Image (tube, rainbow, N blue to C red; front, top):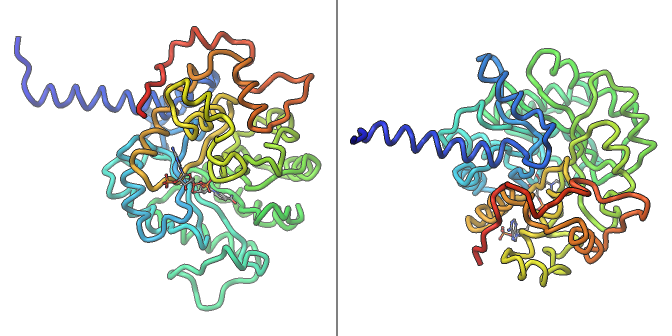
Length: 360
Ligand SMILES: NC(=O)c1ccc[n+]([C@@H]2O[C@H](COP(=O)([O-])OP(=O)(O)OC[C@H]3O[C@@H](n4cnc5c(N)ncnc54)[C@H](OP(=O)(O)O)[C@@H]3O)[C@@H](O)[C@H]2O)c1
C-alpha cells in the first residue's frame, strides 16, 4: 500500500528528531540522568523553558568564533548540538551572534539549552570584559547592579526570556572572595526564583576548601562547574570526590588545545579504533561520566566527528583496563585506592549503544 509524500516526510522528521534527541539530550552513560524526566515535564507544561538537560556529554562553545558566530552556531545546531555555551559581556564571545544563530536554525527554543555567564565589571577582568551596545555610558559599580545589567543584556542578545544556565565567571581561577561572589549570587538566586534563570554555576573552581565554604553559604546551590581539563590542575582528580558529593556536573574546556595536545599521547590507540585522537580524547572524558565536553570547532567535519562520539562513546573502550591505559598515557594520575570514575567494573564490550564507525 502506498504512503503519501506528506506522511513519509512526517515519518522521516520524527525518526530524525528521535535520533538527535536520543543521541544528544540523553547521556547514555548516566542512567540516573534527569533528561527523560525533564523532557516529560517540559512537554506537559508549555511554560517549561527547555526540554534539554544540562547533563549531556557534548556542548558547543562560542569562544573566539567572532563574526562567524551566527553562521557556526546555526551549523552546529543543524549537526545536532542542542546545548550552546556563551559569555555575556565576555570579550571572546559574541553573545548576539549566538542569539542570531539559534533563531536562524529553525529549532524551537524549548529544544535548546542556552547558557551564558556573568563576568564582573572589574579591573581584574580587564582582558576579558567587553562593554555591550545596550550598556549605559557609566557602568554600575555595585556587583549586584552589574548582575542585573548583565542578565538583561544577555536576554536581549540571546533573543529569549529565559536563560537555562548562568555561570559566575571566576576569572582565570583567581577564586574571588566567597563574600564577594555571594553578593552577586544572591541576585542570581532572585532571578531563579522569578523563573528567568535555570541552573547556576561557577567557572574555574580548583580548591576543595574554597568550594565547600561557598557551597554551604548558598541558598540555591551551584549545579555546574566549568573547569579546564589540564595537567596543571591534575585533570581535577583532587576535586573529583567533592564534585561527586554535591552532584556537580562538570563542563570541560581546553580538552584539545591544552596539555593533551589533541590527544596525541594516545594516537596509536585511536588508530586501532578507527577514530581520530581528538575523538578518542573526547570519548575518554565522556566515559568518566558527569561531565560535558565543550568544543568550539569551526569545522563541519569536526562537528560531525564530535556528535558521532557523543553517541557511541559508551562502546568506545573495550574495558576499564584500556581506559586506565589511556588515562596513564595522558598523564592523569588516578589514586591507586580509587577506581576510574564513570563505568568502572562494567562490561564495556557488551554495551548496546551504537558502535563508533570509522570515518577517517
Ligand atoms: N571558563 C573559561 O575560562 C573558558 C576558557 C576557554 C574556553 N571555555 C569554553 O570552552 C569552549 C571550548 O573552548 P576550548 O578553548 O576548550 O576549545 P575550542 O575553542 O573548541 O578549540 C579546540 C581546538 O581543537 C581543534 N580541533 C581539532 N579537532 C577537533 C575536533 N574533532 N573537535 C573539536 N575541535 C577540534 C579546533 O580546531 P577546528 O576549529 O579546526 O576544529 C580548535 O582549534 C569555549 O567556547 C568556551 O565556551 C571556557
